[in-house]
Length: 276
Ligand SMILES: [Zn+2]
Ligand SMILES: [Zn+2]
Image 1: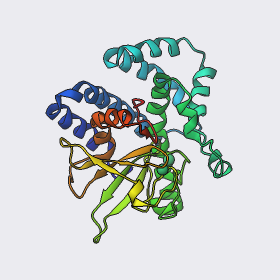
Image 2: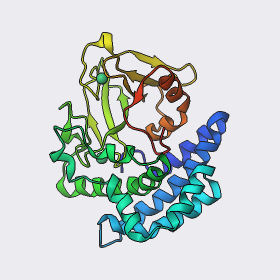
Image 3: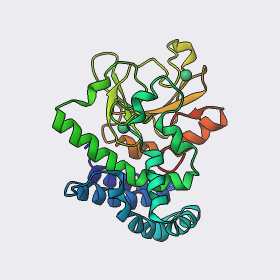
């Protein structure tokens, strides 16, 4: 578990959907998805096979959930995906989940996340919704088995998840001494690893004059860490300012920041579950 249990994520989505009308529908849908992901996560513990194909039986349940509460675009996508043979669904999953590429791609531009970015956002949603609990389960199990901490890439400047090689979804700031500590959180397996505070995770820019920070009034604990050099950004959730925040949920809830960043010509380092 990432330290932010499924139950805490589900509860936080409920809280924020009550208090923020603009994202209420999005977060209610996310709540249902997180409940579904929790079930997948828990069932993986009793599965003997942990290859990606273990996720195939969960597609129909995800389609049903989307049909009930998803956006029209996701409903259409689920209807199309439901027609596909299982080999194609498996290919969709393996297209996004390619942890073995991590080392091979260390010095190239083609990490696993580009693989989800070249998919239509709706198809990527289905792959990510299933791969997140899967990746999280495997990352957790591996850490326990190897007794390796989530700090395996600590302070190395590594911009890929040390477990699965995916891009970071967001940054987390925690109080620690004067400077505060920053970690990055993987978009698929939720692994966190320490990362220096004043460095662009995309291009390595270290000059703080080129690393502007933007904060929205409504969410003063969520900021956009942008880079003028490569024009990407990542959101940071500051737990020293709001200890109730659950990073992955608060990241979704602050979609207005994404729109603002896009208007200002900044490209998000890694789209979230909903493709934004
Ligand atoms: Zn990962
Ligand atoms: Zn940069």
